[in-house]
Image (cartoon, rainbow, N blue to C red; front, side, top):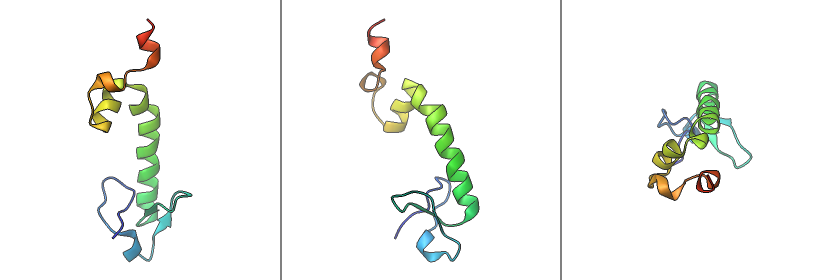
Length: 75
């Protein structure tokens, strides 16, 4: 069983006639609406989460000290 790339969806795209491939790796959304939502989720991750050490640590499930930006260590 596979899982839709939309984090809010639990459907198996292999069971959908409307599945959409969203990456070169073959990741799939179960429908076009989930593909669009996945794009929004990716944009939020790249624009917000990656630029905030605490949010990134929370996403990784590790202490913030493990992901601190190198630039902050030199200040």
